[in-house]
Length: 110
Image (cartoon, rainbow, N blue to C red; front, side):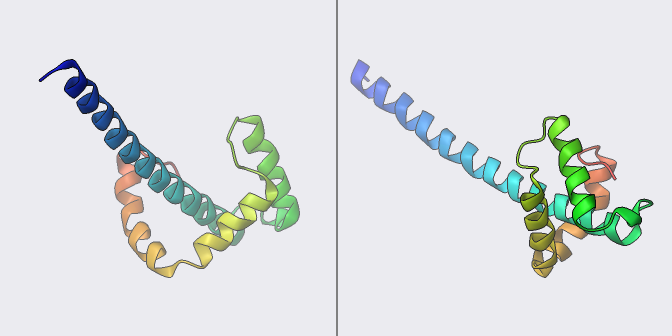
């Protein structure tokens, strides 16, 4: 192996792992957005503050999430997360079964 071969091997390794990382982040963001929708729907149906339903709920939630430094938490995004959850029954069935396991591992909170 010469210097050029080493540089090629390292560049290939970098690109391969970078692409893998991007796919993992994309997957994690899909799960995050679905879970946001799930929690919003569950809160709207069973939450203690149901009187804040609708736009006021999402506006207040957006404000609190932004204050906590959560990116992508505008009112329109929160509406989209809720719609995403409601429109993906196959994901809902798969991830709903995973929720107890994720909660027990401390990956997510209820």
